[in-house]
Length: 130
Length: 174
Image (cartoon, rainbow over all chains, first blue to last red; front, side, top):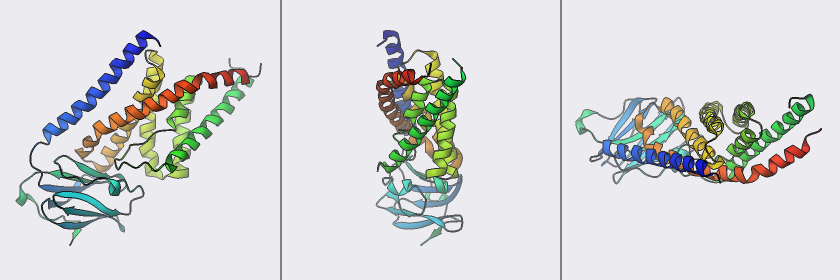
């Protein structure tokens, strides 16, 4: 083991770990506050807003036939079912804290928890709800 | 150094490394490891790229990266997956090439940097795809997972490399 190299190694690794920690900390600071809304966006456009307190199942369609089934209950959200190829969104743990999100890359979907004025939006335009 | 026989030799080893990368991708796909966070992978195929980089050099490593992503993508994935993994693989390869060239780091750390940049490259595509700042939420965990898997892969590479170098050296026709 080369001492000089080892020094570089340690500095580099610490810098990376610190960066990760700062991003995590910063993201937590920005997203302080009470979570009360679920914001669903597709390709950057908001397609649905739902209060977190409400019991709800929403279908978010993608293209002609594809979909993600969103389940909101007990103040947390998760994807019940989706026909995306990788199923990463379905395996994601339920989210409930502000700033947390579930992403379904194949469907360009982002489900995000936020806090905002309850009256600022109604149900989604493109999202079918029942 | 660049006699025709040496070049043939190198081509044969590049073929072997490409096959190795594809097999490692396949093995990784068989392992049921699904933490529910987009982008977390063991990155076994990176082992082949790492070995290639230290055995032959940056040109060969770049070539192997592009070939393995394209062939692997057509075999096991789709066009979107190719764009997604190509961005990660290229970021990773360039990072490892530069760090190796700097000569200031041990192999596991070079590999760790590659792992982190692989995840950051993928996150960039994810950001472009979903167009939502919520991807930042995944950044810390992706940095740390890239770091850990990169160190593991890099350690394996560092242990294996002397033996492979020995074989390649002996296999050369004089």
